[in-house]
Image (cartoon, rainbow, N blue to C red; front, side, top):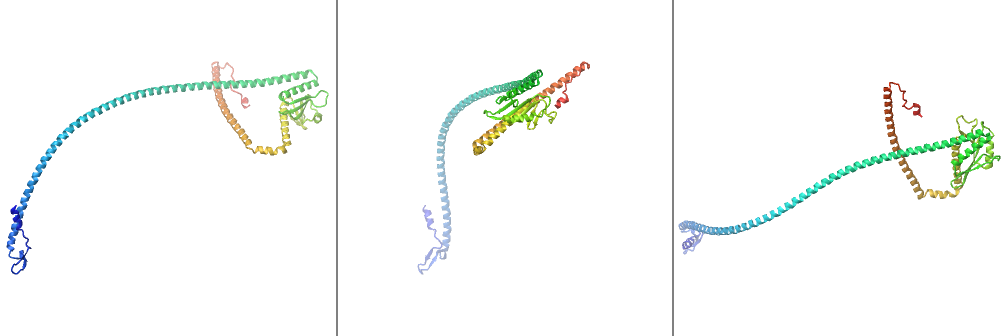
Length: 424
């Protein structure tokens, strides 16, 4: 240590100023007499510094090695203690992990068992549902077949019922028409028999009674007055009545059963019409005027209607409708001035529009129902026509086979309808 101090004391800078004690001249050591000494001193100083540094490095190395050894021993001790702690903790962790693993494994096994049980239950439910679905589908198919069968049966029953109703209605209509024809034939036959048995006057009375009876039966609400024999006037006074019991007009009927037409009949009937206030006059006769055509059954002759026996009733219906229409026009004309404003208010009201709309809707519905009935009727007609055609074809084939087997011994069966009948 003393050597280091002495060596450090020899370290003098070359620029250190030096003062001459005699002349007091100041100069640096490098410029003075100590140059060589300074050079030697500098060399000695460099060596001393080198030794000093080497010594310091050696001591530092030793100190570092000692410190490193101490730290290594401390680290080894800490590592050993940490290994012990970590070993204990690892053992505890392994035990805890094993315990947790066992617990988790038990929970998982329990869950798996529950899930397996749930899966088995779901599979059983799915199997039951599939069986139920199959059963439902089978039942649905059976119900559909049953419904189709019922519909077919109901349709067949309905067709049979409708066919029976149509046949019954047709039979009733035919029976009604036949009854009317029979009644008319009986009445005509009775009248003819009476006319043949009696005189011409008696025959006229019979025809008069027949016409009056037909008019009374056809128009039950009208009033009929019979002109007594010998009294001036026609044969039947026909009062046309409305639904409310009012007289709408009068028709005077003259019944003649002569072989030839007589011109004075018309003026006499006109006088009788003026006498009784009749609106129309009709002569029912078997002999038509010469002006009529050969096939003309009735017509207007000198403002008097002339008709045969067969067309008297249809002519009466037409004339009666005309009388009622004229009566309505008279009533409308009579109250036209007073009710014009009321009629206008009613026609322009909402109630009238609603009623018109209701009537139009009713007609629309009736039209739709008519179209539906027309379609179904055409379908039935086409089906029956086809069936009849097939039956006729089969029947013709059977007839041809029978004739072929009999070697033309049987007469030819005329199964085809006549062309004239088809045209009719």
